[in-house]
Image (cartoon, rainbow, N blue to C red; front, side, top):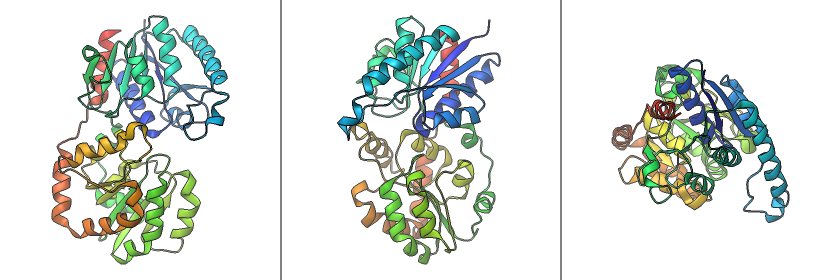
Length: 362
């Protein structure tokens, strides 16, 4: 009998891409394995997972809204409804294991699986564990973490430090800088800055780039700018008619962007950090300050302590980001130093480690 596995979670690229990497690794080891994803309706996973060739079922669920309490009125109803949906999915699919990758859709799925004594696995990519993962960790079979020092969140004997699964398109990328530059119709002779605010964009980064765009261009730089959906129109209008700026809400082929980039400006989500270590790029982090327990700053600081990255506070991005980017672009020695140090932190086989361990235990 072929094994059947549910992978639950999503919400952002930081949850979806590692989930897909784990699914691909499972399928590579056992090609008969049946995999079903469960995500949240209306979220990014409903589009990205089918594109990767997997089936997904969407739950009608929302997370707790910290900024507007009135929006939480329907939450108990949605949660109850999603638990009923999950029970019927589990009953129908009969999984041998359930893997949670974070994001609020993973909670009901793992909760139901644990009640039915189905082996459950968690992948916690951040250096600060999410609340639902901490609650689920007590009954999980195994917990895979992106970093060490996670004993304060999970039972020590269940932890396995694997690193974060980076998509194969990036770990196995053979794209040259020339091909990357051509992909974005830019010039090979110029220093290229890749600006990414995570899969949903980043307001402070976008506003800083918007304000300082002319300065960056005058300094002889060219820009690949992923704005995220909310800022896409503004970004496109700002760059209209200017040479040396590529703007879009999302970059589908990130391996080309990393190949083209000489410097990266980015948020410090766990997956972005993992990808940049593999891509070996000098980076200026602008951590998202409202992430739970400010974990993006924790993620960035882990690299800063190893002299493997630079950082600008979100509140100072408008004043400092463009200036620091131009300074770094001028300083080839600093770029090389950051590149050398960040490349030492690369992990390229986390997906395989996770997949092998799961198949061993089910």
